Length: 123
Image (cartoon, rainbow, N blue to C red; front, top):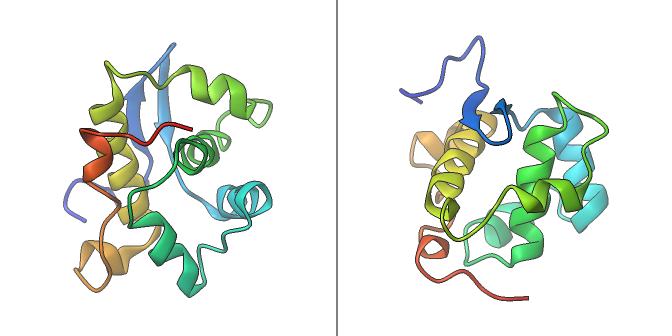
């Protein structure tokens, strides 16, 4: 977790304004409510480490942003992601995931999908 401060694990990102990705407990619950995926259960590693759907990517991204803006909608979060910044978004989500699930950073669990950078699935 070298790129993440353990005391403040938020990952800075410039979108419409400077924001921070943080997958905190509230984000985990919001993500589960939206996707049905429990990130503390075994299915999360399976779903989040394979090539993911646009719906799962958007929900994870949104769940990492709502700590700063609880009124942010999924649709609004999705508008921040486009083909020009997709690689940067995936990199930042990787950091947020590693901060939230430290075992990933230690290599005990696989990271988020790298393949999504080049060929995202279309919904």
